[in-house]
Length: 346
Image (tube, rainbow, N blue to C red; front, side):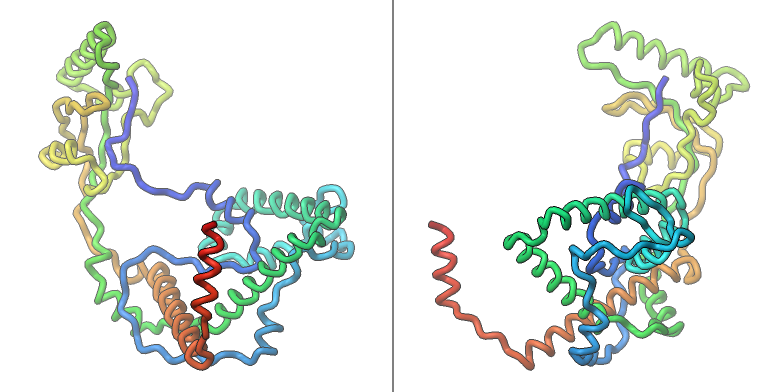
């Protein structure tokens, strides 16, 4: 007997996806967009551009192909490979440049931090080799590096002029947005379920079909016996599979429609008849039910703050760019552009 999910697939971000973020250059970390409902915006003050000198000092990152750093004091070294060191200061700077969600993920999982250090070391080794071979001094590569540096400066400067005040949003703003979006915080009804799953054999395999049907009949006979233990029957002969058949809490909206109708008609601790789907037979036990409810403001506060600040930041960025272009209207040579496009098609 095997198990299979009855729920619709959920999109998830695993450890590998988060760690992959650390491999990318962090010269210009983009602001993280937190998934949340459309919110109501408070009035926005027009951002004031910073003086160019201040922007250059605050926003200019270190060159991509920087020369190796001086030797780090042994007590400050976090990791080393060959002649390459990662200091505590290096790691603090690295983490500070990450988006808030990535920082939170690192704080919760020390193993992820260890992996990040290993990737930093690998990047340092690659950088040392590239600089030693003067690879970064090739004209084509140097031009790409300069474009990357320009892009990083622009992005960091735009972030500096589009960062909302630290005290934004206010408690009043939060409450208004929450009230305006209460429907989006509704949690659907949930069901605590267990199942016994019998896989359907390949079509046309008469012997396998007979075996599956015999297994289904045997399971049904055991379930109808007085004092039947659903979990034990789900485990079958695999006594080590303590969680066999246990699906935990599943949201109503995530249950396959063919099964959802059966589940909603079950009484607590009752078992369904076999439900035939394309993958096999599902026998469901309803253990408990949680009624739908609306999450409170304290429950969604962090998510809501991130979303409101992100939306305000985007609005400030658009406003700044619009004002800048208004002050310095661009002039395009449309004829030259058309000629360039025509030449590229030949």
